[in-house]
Length: 349
Ligand SMILES: NC(=O)c1ccc[n+]([C@@H]2O[C@H](COP(=O)([O-])OP(=O)(O)OC[C@H]3O[C@@H](n4cnc5c(N)ncnc54)[C@H](O)[C@@H]3O)[C@@H](O)[C@H]2O)c1
Image (cartoon, rainbow, N blue to C red):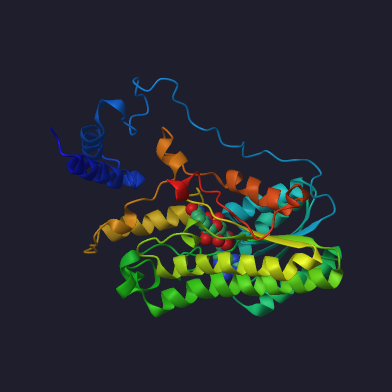
C-alpha cells in the first residue's frame, strides 16, 4: 500500500506542477493522475468521469447598470489600461463624470477621448500618483470640471520598478523586477512602495480632504491584492505594499466614518490584464537564465475558481470592476473598512 505521506507528496508535486499555466506539461498531467488517482484529473478539460462539471461564467464584459452613478464625479487612477480602463469606461456608461489619471499619457488620453466620443463625461490628467502634487491636481481637476468629488477608485499600481510600458528585458532589468528576498534591489523596493503605498496615501489624503470639506459624504475603493493578505515568494515590495493598502483602508474608514465617507478595498488574484501578461513574461524570461530557487514561491498561483475551471481562466477585469463599482455605489451603504476578497476563492483554498 502506498504511504499516505507519499500520496501527499505526490499531490504536492502535482499541485506545484499546476501552479503556473505554462507548467501544465504532459509530464505534470502524468504526475497528477498518479497522485490523484482515477477520481480526478483537473487538467483534462474533457474528462468524462466528472459528471455535471461546468465552469463559472464571468459577468459579460459589456455589462453595466444604466444611471447608477448619474451625476456623480469619480476619480479612477490607472485609467489607461487593465482594470482601471474597464472601470472608467463602465462608470461613464453608468452616468458618472470620470476623472482618469495615468502615467501613460498618450494611452490614457486616448481612452478618455474614446469615452467622450461615445457620449460619456470624462477628463484626463497625465501624471505619476507617487507625487503628492499629482494627487492634489487630480482632485482639483474633479472640482474645477465637475464641481466636486463623490467617489474614487485608487487602482494604479505596479509590480516592479519598470515603467508600465517598458519592454521586458529580464537580463538587463534584474535589479528592478521580482527577485528572491536577499537579492531584491533598492530601486525595485523603493519604486513599488512609492507608487503603491505613497501613491495610495497621497490619493486618499487629497480625496478625503475634499470630501470632508464638501460635507456630502463619498465612497472610496482601494485596489489591493491577495498579496495584501498572504505572502508570495520573490515579491517582497509588492506584498509589503499591498498589506499597507489594507492597513490604510481600515484606518481611513475609521477616520472617515463620521463624515459619511466609506472606504473599502478589493483583493484580487490573477486578473487578465497587461500587468499579468508582463509578470508572466518576466517569469518566462527568468527561466531562460541561470536563475534558480526552491520553487516554493510559485507553489500556488491559482485561485480555487481558476484551478477548477477547465481552461484555467483567471478572473476578467470586468469581474473585478463589478465589485469595485458595487462598493462605490449606494448599494454598499453599510460596507466600510472591509477587504473584499475578489479572488475566486484564492485565500480560502
Ligand atoms: N492583474 C492582476 O493579476 C492583479 C492582481 C492583484 C492586484 N492587482 C492590482 O490591480 C491594480 C490594477 O492592475 P492591472 O492589472 O489593471 O495593471 P495594469 O498594469 O494593466 O494597469 C495599471 C495602470 O496603472 C497605471 N500606473 C502605474 N503606475 C502609475 C503611477 N505611478 N501613476 C499613475 N498611473 C500609474 C499604468 O500605467 C496602467 O495604466 C494594481 O493596483 C495591481 O497591483 C492586479
